[in-house]
Amino acid sequence: MKLEDLQKQYPDATTFKFGDGASLSASLLQLIREGKKKATCGALHEFTEGHEEMPVEGRCDIALNWDGTPALVIRTVAVDIKRFCDVDEEFALLEGENDSLAGWRSDHQAYFERNGGFDEEMLLVCEQFEVVEVVDIIQTAR
Image 1 (cartoon, one colour):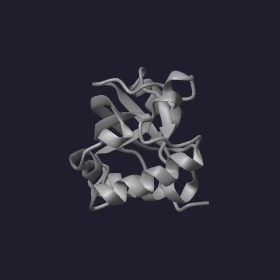
Image 2 (cartoon, rainbow, N blue to C red):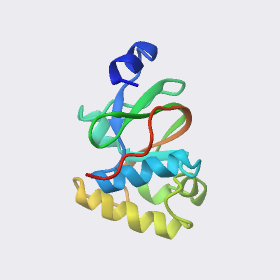
Image 3 (spheres, rainbow, N blue to C red):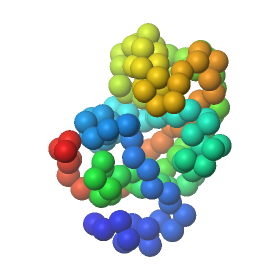
């Protein structure tokens, strides 16, 4: 399905990519397709400084493959703003990337250090979502 068709079907949807590179993006999309990843987070400053649009509870958004083609449609079911140090194991496990809070903290600290800086007190936008539609088959990292 073409992105233009999805944007007509979900006129309020924003588009975005998971991760910060092709390989990470593909693995996160795979976790979502397998039902293991049901949450994500990002640094609040990425949203408030105009880089990304804030998730909105109830809105559907289109997740893209790294090459910009549509991968799936998600619906936001909850949005919270939390300090990094206040993220609990329940949320960390919903992200589906690790089997412990310690693993989540380690991986996310490295991610934030690669993408603009890290601080234990930094504010995160913590989003829980559900899959509405899987658009295509898994794309390999390019």
